[in-house]
Image 1 (cartoon, rainbow over the protein chains, first blue to last red):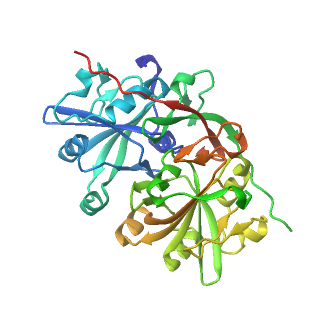
Image 2 (cartoon, each protein chain N blue to C red):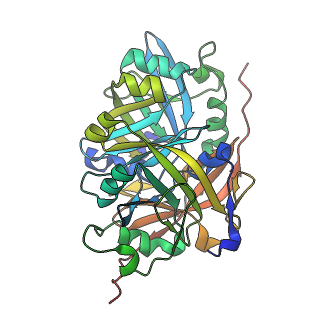
Length: 195
Length: 195
């Protein structure tokens, strides 16, 4: 994505970047090391201040960096990045720098050391809310969103609008590199109770 | 949905019913009372035994029934039910039985008292994993999936396949009754590291 299209999202609307359940990339950096991984198990946890929940396996290097730094970034990748999402979700960063190995372009956030990946359609900078019992027992990490951004070609005024940008549609992982992409819009109406 | 199309899903594959991030309906029953509500903030938490996480606001009647019963059902509604999802997500069941008011058809599960809503495309019967700190502080509820079912027109062999069934596509709420429906399939490949 060109920075031209990157716009801040008000914190009160940050949950809407995740509300439709896209598969995410999680990045973290600590002591000069950095990593990025895929995470399908993530969700909003509160509106304002916005909070998030994400599951990070004990074996992941990103988790160790995140625990060390106390900060992390959630980013929403798009259809054009499907092979990249599959790749960073199936390789370890503890021995190889994935950013160098796969030529990943990043930019700096305002509140975290974690790299933000170019080409995604949304980014959420987060501060870890330490909950050791959840982390140890369930691999469950909670965070507060401290800044959010989105690509204004597909997200503006609190709404996603992917029409005409199929390559920017969000990814929704099922299993084994098999993804669904997000589809069309639908406005629901409230029903009238039966007499 | 005709029961003809309802098939059990092995517990080892139950997470795949939620992995792509659909908006859910949550139902619970206790002491002869029952309710159903919408929840966009839900995710898988473990593979096997499968676990789930869902956010339930303190004001909701479903939460009270769930806490009383210790069981609940997550169900995956579809595009044909969008108005219904919006309606049960914006009305309270503490004074009116939503099932009667909106003519909702249900069937019985094998492990819970909670009603399972006909017309959804997947159902997960769950046992609450009590975590009082999470429930009080974050409105966050964890559960173990004890049985799962799906409509075999759109889910079989561990995969979703919505082609030819647009009315059965899953719903992904953004805000205010504005939904996205799930789109097409995409198989990703792993990239080769740069030399």
